[in-house]
Length: 494
Ligand code: HEM
Image 1 (cartoon, protein in one colour):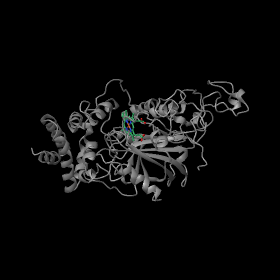
Image 2 (image 1 turned 90 degrees about the horizontal axis):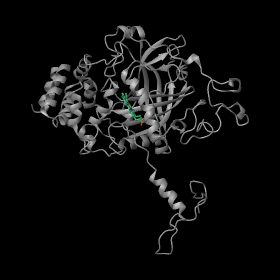
Image 3 (image 1 turned 90 degrees about the vertical axis):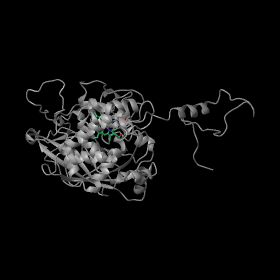
């Protein structure tokens, strides 16, 4: 006999969970089956919309430890002292597939880290690649549509993907990484993570520095070929991570940053805010600043991994945005997605709730709780203690600062963002950017086997596109390196 009483969701003991109440053995059910109705109604509501991208993922908790202070560059509270530790939650994902798609798609891997700092949550929502397919957010829905299933057949359609790429040379660098031998990671433990975007640090003197974040796997990069991936169980990467952590084999990453001053950015020959480009290490060497380890699995996949809400706009004092156009688009997109997917009070769910006091004047909405961290918005403002409701206020400014009403902190303001002198507001085409040199450089450091894999992987999909698309892709490859184009042409049998 169990010591635990089965109850309704309102806490009342349940008499029978095997039989509905009915009129005799052979008769219909009656209207007093309220427990049955509750059970069926809740079941109907078990799903929330899956993420429109990065739907398939897995996550774990861990620890970030500072190994080099960044005090000179940033006031970020969690980056000040060597040895300082911050709890993190890291979600890995594939991009294009649905919740139950395979872990072994040839697809970038999402690498999202939530740092629960003492001054709020900082979310680093990156990928396992240092660049992206695009440099203007207006193209994002088109790009994703071209990679997802075809709207008529609901089947994968590589011709659509190449049709997009043939019209967007800006995708060449990231596409070359995707089609290379690195395109299918063996597991989430064997990927790097990158902010990809340029972000910024600012210090106590109000100086701003541009920076990029890199997380280098201590497990080493390990990848699969298409044939090897086809033999893997669909959810193998998720199982690999869960099992490794359960065994006490905690995966870890070396954390590095690249830093560029505002003056260096002005004169640098590469646009430092173009997400299709890296900053070569020889110009901006990586600086090791920490170690990230994953050491605890989730208890409830839905509550934690499915409901976690990462947002590139979740900055903390000392870390801010950059003029990167793609980043700017993402600053809006994610919170909007969270409100749709989870609801207005998504930050009150434990996995999203900051581990520091939360005080604001936002109120109410679906599922607003009471009492920190699950609620700062019902009958009382959350800065009151239970005994002094008199001090509560739901508006700012007010006359109650002395009673503990929250007030802004001017010292955390980011320095003004520089813009180009005499910049004009309008549609600015980026078609004249150089999208070929870095892709060509990557191609040229590949060995023969890697090049052969690249040609074969591209030809696999490109062979399904029409001749016009093939010819335009070959012209794009040729601008990166004639041997790149020739190799793909040969693999296509042209
Ligand atoms: C303008 C361009 C982009 C838009 C509009 C966009 C939009 C979105 C949206 C709506 C989601 C789902 C969020 C949710 O429901 O919780 C998402 C997830 C994600 N995106 Fe983006 N995205 C963009 C570019 C990027 C880039 C450049 C990266 C990487 C450098 C990236 C990495 C991710 C990751 C890792 C996730 C999964 C977050 C998680 O684990 O919950 N996205 N994106």
